Length: 315
Length: 315
Image (cartoon, rainbow over all chains, first blue to last red; front, side, top):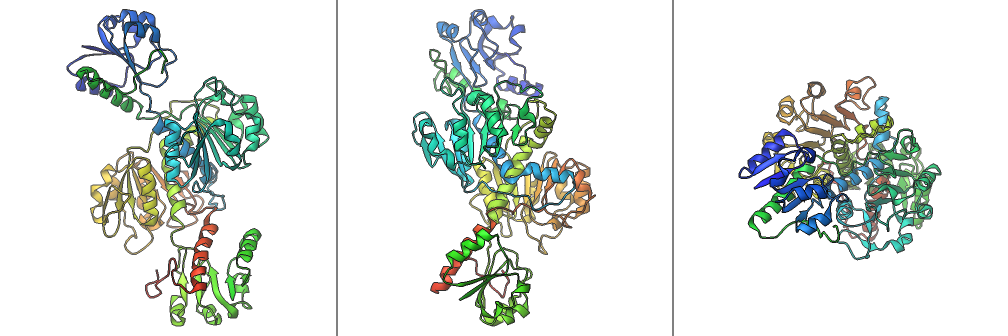
């Protein structure tokens, strides 16, 4: 059996994979240079951004595609469906890094680490910095699914109050209360941290407007690790220029990379990070773990796959 | 009944206290200006650094001293014992801010927030920063009592492995394993974060030596929020100059404030914070909560005080 990885991991990782799957023919090659391997490949392991109908057609023996990420906008699902190819992905591996990033951001804010670091640079021993706490603060999570839920779980460990917003308003085990976006105005005036992990959909496009920000506390902190088009950029700029809330930590933007010279870079109440919340040293090990599990299911034909994609729905 | 506060909180806090205890005579005055109030004071509320035998003698009606901190090195315990004065303190209020500070420091390290911030200052969108995680990392807590235990509890929520070191080696509910310092060499080579919350005692003075650091990983991170004399300063300087471990986050020092020009300030693998881990906006509210509880016990004479000090032992 031939397995084609359409990305080339570090040598040590390649070696580990070859050893673990030593009974099989393993090829590491970007798809553009994989013409020799494609016709024989029974399994393709990909980041999901390099396949197209043509490649699927050439991969005559292909039975299973493992996507090592959660993004699948570029996948040729129809071609896969016609051939009955199994598609699985690595959904779920983002929740730990993104939740850690969010809590780290909130701690940075209340503990004033950047201000303390500026004092350090001046060799200034200043104990008057106003240090706060997460304990007792109110976190409002927009989109309490896997990532938002993990964030909520950690927030509860920090003795925070947590309100979750989701489509159905159904309860979440790590939120004190859950509701739908329709009722969000009831929670905005009390929230200390408003965190969005919402994806980009028709429903979430420009969902937060100026009025929502005007309902928040002056001390409120907005953290966006979901998608940049949740708020119209001009609105967010206005909100932060007028200091309607205390701080915005933005990891996602309408245009990425955020261009040099963009006002967000220099605003003292806006912190820009380069869409980095899901990045982690554990990305590959964790997605390989899902591959490992699914490979066992595939080999033994017992069918208990993780993250099977419904090709007709695309998720 | 007269209650003397030997510190002067903000007006709004004074007002709140006066309202809450409106049946009693409340005085706010530093001890040096409190000569008129001392003879009538039945209760003294203090930070514990301003009393002496002379004041105790003058406070002829004094029955209870509430210390709004945990430090009691300067308390005239013998004089209190002779008069049978009840002494209680605010032990336990440090654990939340100090544990949050420690987790915040660890997240800052793995998420590389300072490096990302430097990129932000240059308006540089750089996603190649090597971002890590707390999940799966090994935390070694030197001194797993109230503060170390709260840190361990949070670390477990972050899916870390936790080893606790205490005097007895007895188990702690939030540590995967606990042991005594004698056996620490078994844990140092595996630890990713070594956090000390140890107080200054004869036992802890210069307890960590060069050999201990040489047993740690090159990637290890040392965080000291206990006392500066845990490690001889020259040793710690040498360890960090030779880059035997990756980073030291120091909140406490042999000499405080850390003098300007001290090499720690400028070392890229040492982060200096000004003994700030226990500072929080909630300090006064939280110690007042203990006072409130104990005041009820005192008034109703039901004896269920929090944090009664054994005057013969001094803690």
